[in-house]
Length: 401
Image 1: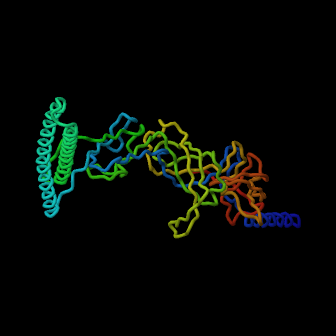
Image 2: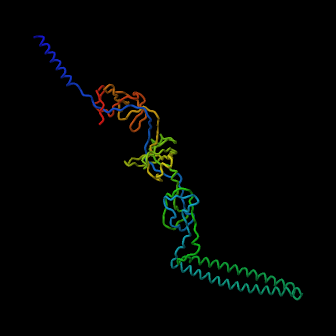
Image 3: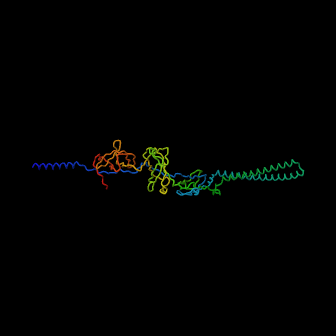
């Protein structure tokens, strides 16, 4: 009897112990795990940039005149010293108001009268010169026969020279008044819309460099001053990228640094290289109204032109400038890291339990960080550890749906 009671008591005790164990037992926490791996890694700084032709050639008007309607269109291919890109003809004379026209016509009449007067003076001078020459010939014959004294011959010679000089003066005076008349008539040129053969004389401007027409100031014919820009030409195969970085990022960039050009509109990323960093920064207000000190950075596109045929001048791109890179780094997802005091730590998965493991972190990028110590390749770490995860907690990897 007593043995039966003892067995029954043992069974009850075992049942109570089992119930307590079942009640106190905790289910394993489902977690997401990632594997610590070795692979290439690079740290970049991202900025928005704009393409631009490295060398832009500007065609300007060499003279003041009327440029004809554009001979080329934006995007046209031109060849150096072969393609005519613009043509300039002399400008049409300005229109005269009523007063100016009357003054110009009066000046022409005055010049015409002066010409007629000079013609009369010339006729008189020609007559005097002819008479003096005839008198000189008669006195010459008489002097050789001894009929008149030598002094009379000398007087005739002097009068003939004076008459010749007067004739020359009259001729020059007539030329002077003819030139004045032409100048006065020039003031009336074009006042009635008349044209002359001089309007057909044009200055042809040839392309100073081979490339594509990037911009035309104005398609229409118009009056331009000397030095006015007409169009710009550039080689789309020789592109640069201009971007600006925060000064704190720019000091970490070195000339020659590699960069990846993304979101430019084509397939894949283009390769570029930093060629120049401006020594002086500038202030720019961000979209949030914060003043930022930025620095211009220039990059050369090193990808072959046939991979970026559609990329043009002043196109928007996004540039990832490489600050640091290595072909082999021990990497851990940043989502597995959490702060532990002054350092970093992760939860490793060891035989179904979470184990807190301090780690030393080196470089970091968007999603992964470089592990300097604390982890080994192949270790499993918990991603996004929550408050329920503690050191020694039982865990199970969440099944992928």
